[in-house]
Length: 385
Ligand code: HMG
Image (cartoon, rainbow, N blue to C red; front, top):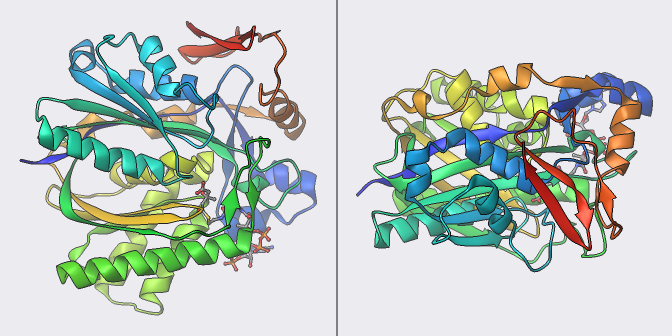
């Protein structure tokens, strides 16, 4: 039985910051951001958006009433949780109007957990082939104003349906997971911004990619020529290049050219929104599929990485007509609204964060279908527009 990704949808906020503006405001050469880091724009988050509203918006784009009836389980993968106890999946299930006889849970391991969510969903479907699992990767990447990580911030959610006879990507058997206790990036419970050892984190990422890919080769006997493309977790686009270069070095044959070309296609959307943490790898897959010319039967490699740290390399085979089962991300990104650096800074500081006070947000200008109205008696108030 084939099991895999049946539908995908991406949602981000309506506001973005141009990183040339950010570079100018921070006194940095813009080429460092656009070439050195490889980012052009980043999503900016208004107070009326969080991982629940973004996750629900992404899921709404792919759920027809018929598909909604089939969802047995909702898994939300995030490291930007809004509650230490209650799962964001419950709020999202409610906003989407899903049946009460639904299983809901939230998962965490930095940027990696959506991959665990997909693997667990695959297991559920293998045991109960009639089940469809909704996996939502939703995050807000925050490093702080005037930090080295600021240029790599971003926000958004990718929703995916995992089912039998999938329309986009059938997952293959072999997967390689790799975990070590590493302090490259973390966020203590009292902090709303991440702590990061930036340069170290990029080295750990590359090491984990090489470890998992080498083990995968040993198990399967496959090599790079067996892949049409490899999609990477993209905290910023240059990271994908660093990882692929670590394997290709100065190799310049047809295989290397193909992998480099497809890497560029997979980076296009990340350049426009920044790091999505859990969703970044999957936005990369959507970017590859919408900007490249791939065909049914092509094998994709997926490298998932979450700081702390855990990596997984796994693969899938593209299904015929995969193009018809995703929202048009290019179109959505073209319709966003640009904010100035001053507006971005105000919005950055205006998020609910650790604030325990009652508050009401002005949601009139927020065009997304779900909004956070505010907070009362320590309870978040969501609204379907
Ligand atoms: P930095 O110190 O500002 O940057 O931090 P840099 O000085 O290393 O420069 C970056 C690149 O720009 C370099 O290129 C420079 O040469 C180049 P590289 O050597 O890397 O190829 N450069 C220029 N290029 C053109 N024109 C110029 C120019 N000047 C310099 N004028 C860093 C960069 C990524 C460390 C920082 O942004 C950071 O800490 N980011 C956050 C951490 C991160 O994203 N780590 C990635 C791996 S860990 C991961 O992926 C997990 C994560 O997603 C979290 C999770 O799992 O939850 C982060």
